[in-house]
Length: 284
Image (cartoon, rainbow, N blue to C red; front, side):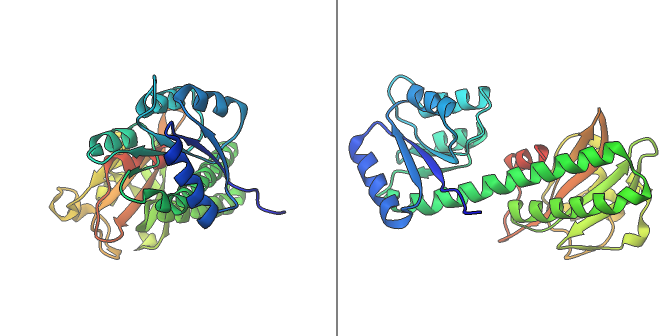
């Protein structure tokens, strides 16, 4: 089946900026189908009428600025990844946009339009990957609820393996893992990992025996650890390869109980996990 073309909504009230952006896409990504509107209300109306794979949203719009449009997108639950465009010196607005759910942002530097085609493709790929993770998780949830019988366990493992591999790619981490937890016994039943090596012979074991890896279960909220060797639970954490440098873990809650922990391990490029990084994992 042929791949559907990417549909992009461009929200920009400056006709010169719009023309330069259209030229950049015509040159570097001519297959992308672009719809243009000049204000926030027109953008919201367009989202009602059509599906878009991405949106480029200028902050400086008449009547309703970009952040206000972004609030409406979140409130109405429109599933469109947004790239916020702001002027130079407006970095604080870009940060606020990311907190409100924007996928990325770009400053209006010289020839910034030339960067947009590749950025849109990157954001669309990230959003599609996130959707696949959510679908894989939903299938795993349903199968988990139907039965934990041995005959079903292999199918669950295949789905969860796909999930952790996707998390590793999405979070750009060296590794990722999923701990399957029995909340009644407060016990880790098994672990499925990608990119890291753990001694699986220690499972099943109490949650307390996995140290930092089990902290999201205890706290019942996302946890980021930047200096694991300084944490009191460091010595209780199972050894792994590569060595744990930083960690982002979120509890997976089903019917009010934490029955799993999804974690990304060691952010690539020697960088750190941010609090916002927990959002895509929490939605899985």
